[in-house]
Structure formats: structure tokens, C-alpha cells
Image 1 (cartoon, helix red, strand yellow):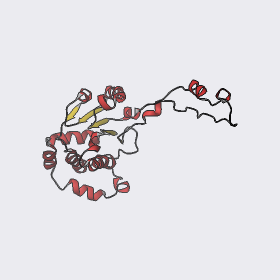
Image 2: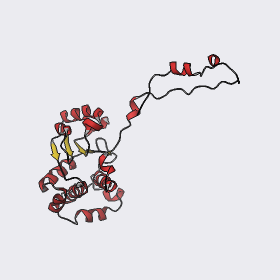
Image 3: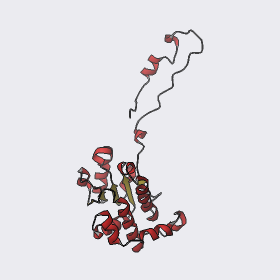
Image 4: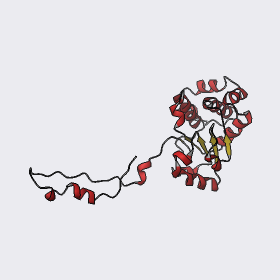
Length: 214
């Protein structure tokens, strides 16, 4: 999560951090204060706009068209990673798909202006760039295809496996908690009283330091 501080561009794609990732808000604010550009992509305007330099509101379900419009712009401007063909399967097929419509057509399908797609694509190309994907898109029609399109942007732009890059859906939320709660020991003899068991319930409770509920 703190690797976001190494990003030059951060895209909140369908994510409202004030609702679903409140713990990341201070990091986004710090990243922006350090010069990172934040892009919000969401059909609904919410508090995340307070953090963003650019807000894009595609129609609901227009994310695939938007992603393909961004991909076309990356190909057109030579911003695709030079080694992408080495580690991306079916790169040429994806390029053909992006060029199957004009940039204006993709913009119309997403219900945004062509220059908005161009601006987002150009900012994203100036990386390292990270995309934070909201959970909602994965839980609707064509959700898996939408997520794969966004993943593809991270891949072809060379933003996978680099500091400040990546396409993220989830953080290791338990990482800040000590979950090393000792397992209770079993008594070696039958009939031993609980008070003589070193692993009795009461002793285990005394050793409890933290717990995670969620």
C-alpha cells in the first residue's frame, strides 16, 4: 500500500476510498502532496473527487470501452512497453481489438469526450502508474472482462512488477496486526484438572494480545 508513494500517477477506477479503503486516504493525500496525479474514474461523483486532479464519469458499464480507448491511445503514441511482446500473450490481438474502433467511437461508447480519454492515457503513460480497482466492477455483468481489460493496461504499459506501479484490488489488511496467538496446549494425562493444564482456556486468554474480526 505504501508503494503508492512511489507512483507518479494513481488511478482510482471505480473505487471510493472514503467508503471502502479509508486507510489509504492519508497515503493518497501524501502522494498527491509529493506531486503524484490522481485520476478518478467512476460513473458516480463522490468524495474521492476531493483527492483527484482529473475526474472521469463514464456511463455505467462503459469501462471496457474506456479501457480500450486508453489502450488505443497508448499504442498510437508509442507508450506501450518495448518488451511487452515478450511477456504479454496475444499482444497483437489486443492491439487489433483496440484499433477495431476509432478513439472517438470508444469515447462515445463510454459516454466521455475523446480528449478526456487522451488526457487520462497520457497521464497514465507518464509512470510509474498504479491502478486501484474497486470491488463493484467485479460484481456486475461482464465484470471479469472489465477487470481483465484494466489488467491489460497495466501489462502493456510496463507497470507490472515495478515500484509505484501495479493493478491492485486488495491489500494485506491483516499485515498490521499480530495474529501469532499461541495454540492452547493439550494435557498429557487424562483427568488432569484445568488448573494444572498450562494450555487451559484462562491462560490462553491472558496471552491474547490482539485479534482480527472481519
